[in-house]
Amino acid sequence: MDYRRDWTYTKEKLVNAIKELGFPPELGEQIAKQLGSPKAMERMMAYLYNVRPRSAELVVDEMLAICSDIDAWRNKKASEAANARYNEILNGSLNDYEDDEDWDL
Image (cartoon, rainbow, N blue to C red; front, side):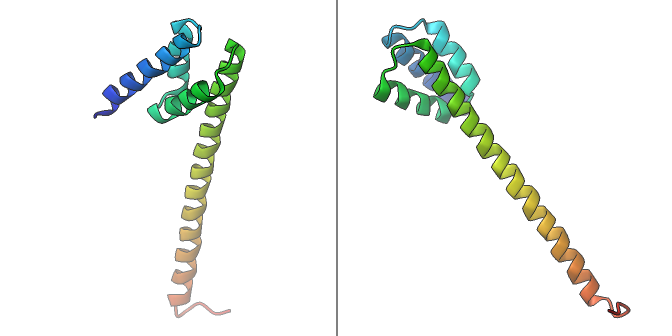
């Protein structure tokens, strides 16, 4: 299944889950747009099916919590990549100096 088809299918499932709880389908549309990925929408659906929130505020709070977790994960991965690159530079620079015969300490 390609990504667009998967996204559309998951979005429709999320909108239906929102409607089943008695909320307007527009809420589901906006939540799907904010979450952005099928995996995040599936996480939201798990919350909806298990908790069955009674207010739109609880639904939106969970959406914000999922978005916050995604942002934290992205920041962590970016930090890890930057740290790995920094270590490569340090290790590469140190190896360059060790191979240089004119380098006296």
